[in-house]
Image (cartoon, rainbow, N blue to C red; front, side, top):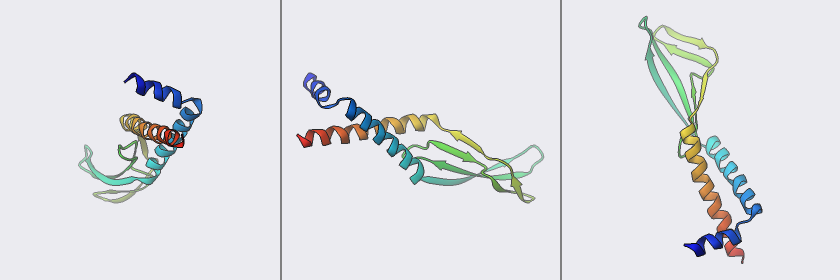
Length: 118
């Protein structure tokens, strides 16, 4: 086990660490941009009006952001109404898990490319 840590210490300097962080950022951006899931939620308010709210989830493999009721029309039991601004929520558990996953992936790529160049 000591040999593994010593090998990582010898092959992983500041330049490789910065490259790993940049790759992690690129992976997170691509995961955010490349995967969107659309769903709907039905809510009933106190007066009995049913609202269908459109929800968009962004991020892969764990969802990092959710947009509730995006700007546009909302379907109700009375018809379609124009909704104002939507609500955007950052799902921090997904952000942290995706960061850890993509950091490990970027670390493995940088480390193996450095080892194979030798």
